[in-house]
Every structure is written in structure tokens, then in C-alpha cells.
Image (cartoon, rainbow, N blue to C red):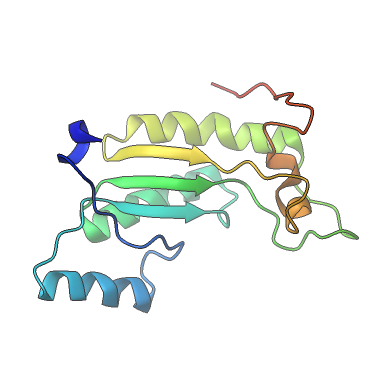
Length: 145
């Protein structure tokens, strides 16, 4: 952490909405009070197209001018549930990762990112099932590089 921003880092609250009123109002308040925010954390689940995902990351950075920490991301099917299977295949998730991971690595302002790996006891499991990387038996899938 010290290499990134000294003895401690202060992030804005995590939000999946880059230009939402809440986030804009918060950041305006930070500026008005002359407070400091060192990075913008994001959770991103709702952008299944890898190029649009990377554009969103760029837009957030351009909007706030802060380094980006993507503290959770995955390819999520919001309509999936116990009776409606996830529409994304494991292959589609891997293809997504094959574009997004190198794209994040190329962006110097993206300081950290973390894939969100769900668990079978999560009530939203089916929404993220095909994005799971580590299974209950402690087996993992091959992560595309």
C-alpha cells in the first residue's frame, strides 16, 4: 500500500455507477470540503461486453481523474435464478476475461483488480455460476492469460 499512496489509502465508496447522482454528489462534497480521495473503487457486474467494460473503466478514470481499484468484477446474468439458468457459458466468461485482463494490465491508472468468485451458498449463485473460478472441492478452472 505504501508504494501506491503513502501510509494509507483513502478510497471513495464503491459504486457500480460512474455518473450517478450519489457518486457525483459525494465527490463534489469531497472537493468542497477539501478532503482527499486517493482512488476510485468499482464493482462491475453488469457490462458483459469486454470492450464496453474497458470503456466504462476509462470513463470513470476520465470523470474523476483518480486511479482505479476494481474490487469486484465478474460476468453476471442478472436474470438467472434457481429455475432460469445462467445465459453465459464458461467459454463466454473465459473469452471476456481474455480481453478484459490484458486491457486492465495495459491501463497504468488501474492499480488493482479482483475477480469476484461466488460460492454455492450465495443466494445469487446462479447469476454468477459460470464465472466461478474456485469450486467447493477446492478445484480451480484455468484462468486465461
